[in-house]
Image 1 (cartoon, rainbow over the protein chains, first blue to last red):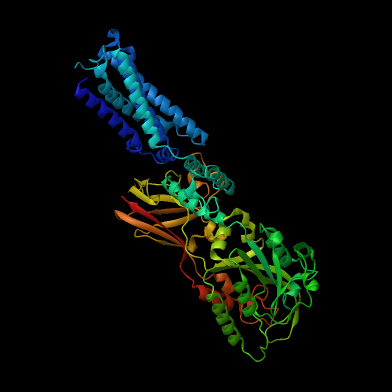
Image 2: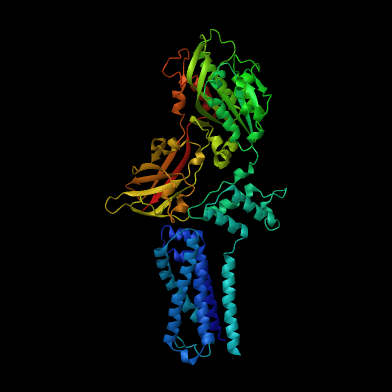
Length: 148
Length: 484
């Protein structure tokens, strides 16, 4: 285990933890009157940021260590997983947000869709972070997406 | 083997990350329940009691929230609720300190002077007795109220509460109690204030006509001055008290005793007064508690005024999304009354925003609160103000949390001429005009146009109380900061 790779892993975890801790700040870079306040009041920024952190890490873990096959070690295989992350994360986030808002008699369909489209980008960034944190120890996919 | 170790390692890393992230944001069940209550705007006594039961169920965990007797401490809990409420957008205030005042007692001081008897004449509609009965019925512990008869001194009422409520001619049944020929306000008010316990609410039912003994050949001006000084002297000693005066109208059928004039028969309307006396803190608590709503706003009261009402903050927030808004602005996350990135409308350059405020705690009637003339507005750019009472048909799913619990919309409009400015609105606490209108300088002529609506020397007596507490100022002030 190279020390450099361990540092990547630690940095990746730290970056992801920072994203969760400051998730609200990240999301409010695009502030929407009313909607953003309710996201804050119902603590949904935290919930969604945890989902956005966990899905990419779980997906990267599955790709590099569960799939971990030479048949899936090309860059476009990695892109397919990235696409899945960019699909699953906003859908899960939307479902949680919509459910909590609806329980409280609120309706923010357009705002939620915009929010999740932006969240899709955060998910992509975190998938890249997770990939470069953990790929080094994968026996078959450590050269994906970019060779070492 | 190596592969399995890495899978386990990565799974452990993800699990630790998830655990750490969640634990960072984990709050206690009590904090969660408080947040939920505030977000749902469920600020009722029942909800507060449910919070207390959470505290009581885990005394070790919440020992800092318990009193020495092991009971949930409303004041400490209030602090925690304030802390959580201040993190919400808009911040939510929940005055739970009032729940600390659980048991209030009521004492009715019923004036039985000669000029009061005709208010309860058998031929009249009995508004005076009805008003007193309502006070007893609408006070939560009214069935334990004390009743006193007052004229030259204070005397106990010999019957029970039920006897009083059912009595069709209270003056006949209390005939012979004290000396009905004059009313010693000095003795009465001094005694009421002297014996009043902290949780007691005293109500004097009176026509507020100052009629001391031995006034032959004394000029009215001298009597007015004496009355004014007397009121000031009495109440100046009790700065912590508040006095609420309600004016009501009642049928008057019988002999009227004018000052230094011949008694005459009068049949018509006359004003009478309910003077509520209690600690300011108690009046504040009752004003904020729905259980006292009917007691605090008696049916039939045509005018009311509270003496010694401190300026207080009100629960308010700017509506981020509202039909009357024009131009653009963003509500600051930490200060709900600070608007940043303000821009006027593209075509008209007018910036218009609305503040939803809860004004019912100010104990002013709906007409007073809805009249923009009662508000003093200060701004550098000449903003204008419109006041609209909030009704439930204004609620939508998204603005409900901003409007719920609020009573009035204060809509400001103007062209912002500076990069930063403040719009300040105050609800002014002026000596009320109705007291001046309801005051007479003579009462010898029953056919005078204002005889039915005025009371001799009312302005002097109530003015004396106002002098004791100091008047002026405002009931509340709201300042909205604007920044481009």
